[in-house]
Picture (cartoon, rainbow, N blue to C red):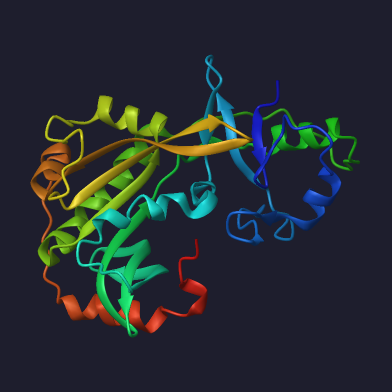
Length: 278
């Protein structure tokens, strides 16, 4: 069994795949760009690993945030949080919007006549790995009959569960007060396996399940399902507010921000390319 489940968005169990062409082009089908995960020693080589197997149970773990962009489903699943959206408004997806405490990966915005009517912040988080998946990638490549000049080193990889979870929860704490202050929503998109770990390791008694639309912080948990290929599917929705997340971590954050600052940043970035197309 291959440890690499998906490479460059393609399931490694599929037959009659032109892997040589895929490895040569190095395109991520979810971003429609070259895979951004490159080797430090070979910046012209993209690694391309989306999902890997881990542990004795061989769980499929998503290790690339772009994997969550499949079919833009995660954005469609957030549209209900645009409470000021009206028929006739356009929906735009804008990346990397600065907010106090950092930036958010994406904003889904309801736009009328070039002006923001409402918006929702969206953060993606997948598990970071320890070690390297390069060995498993090269093994698979060799099995596909592709010539490998280098010696395949026997190196392994693991999952950095605790540090990844603590880091993203800390980042959310510094951002969610901004959205709560503005009366807006912030959504964390994660794989269900990773979210289940967070619920076990942190104090999640204050997390609402099912999610309450009145809560500023929403958690959308996705599973990988086999249906006409490998797809992500919304499994659970949880929610909380600033106090609930602070209780989870035992920390507090301070924030002062004007609504127009974020709205201006969104409006400066909206183009025909950011329009959500169905």
